[in-house]
Image 1 (cartoon, rainbow over the protein chains, first blue to last red):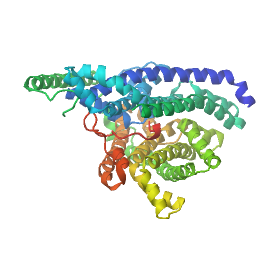
Image 2: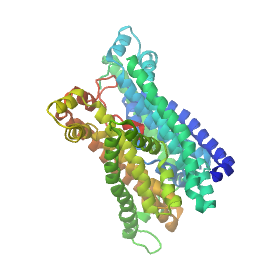
Image 3: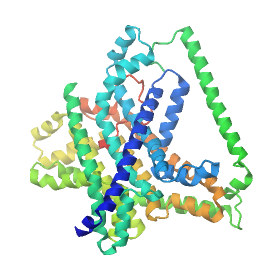
Image 4: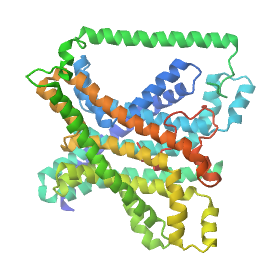
Length: 216
Length: 302
């Protein structure tokens, strides 16, 4: 365990970058994903079509390919994305928002039909029905799957290590390469830091899921 | 599409909607035209950006390029997935059975293994194989894909077992089947059936994750794209990327469609009310479920 203790500063600085990536991309993806979900159930077919295309494209593309596009292909269009950290934030938010959209949409689908009918019966418009009646209720049942999406995002930030962002996995890889005889131990250290986030979050999702199930 | 979120449109609303759709469509077309003009200004549609696909420079044949992309690149991607997927399915099935054992201390290791591998990035598992155990890139990729997906598949199957109506187990016990017989002959076949869409969705994830081999130095499709672009020149990145991304989309979307199709036709044959609730999308607000609307299994399918 000396190896992990000796390299604690390196681990912690990597861990901080991983956290920043997760929180920033998570926030962007939540906002953009909710907008996409609203577009997918809207009356305007153009909006629906756009959202469906976006979600289907991103869901069926590997995250590595999204990174690849931003880092290697976009410059050929003359678009120069900011290197490193912000490229990773853009790729992760774009990718995760598709999954957020699906989670929110299935939450909207889970609200009893009577709620929307009642809202319409008292004369609310589409945006009022969605914003005041359906979405606030959907949030409850959407929270556990959304936490799972964010857990996946936390793990997905590791892909940024392959594209010049020194986050947790990249710092762990450096330590492992510097100490080849103890490489396994160095990677166990990385794993511990990931588990610190993912296991409590998974537990929280499970607890909330049971709570929502009882409340209904 | 009619939806309970808004009224069945009357003539005025229909006209407004049609105008909105046309204006929106025109806006999209205008944006696309602008993007094309912009790209055209940068010479993106010049033959010298695309000839790599039919008449590559440096005295190479188009055949060699396509072979390196499709046969070697996609081939390597599929090979890793084809080895990892059966392994993950079998190990996941074993883990799921192990986890439903009734004795708590026997069950604990399975729970630990599942929670551990579910909570770690696939890339980290690949690095374990590569740096920790000193394996070659292929073995590392297969190892990473297998251990992660077996944990997720075990969770999917467990959810499938839990969703079965209680009467199935009770009936099996009543006719004198043992616990193992009940599990193997009654519960698992139904659980696999119910969860088939989620299992296929997970296989799509596995295939997607094989692209992480790019980072650990496994020569798969992305690496083939990069190698070609580096050899022929960076200006070919766009053409090569479109081919590579197209291959991924075609393979993954066909698999997803297969899952949706299975979900539709699997319905009536599974037992009981609960199974039907799982397979048929609830008559909810957003209208028909649409492609890809099935439940993602156990939160790991991203």
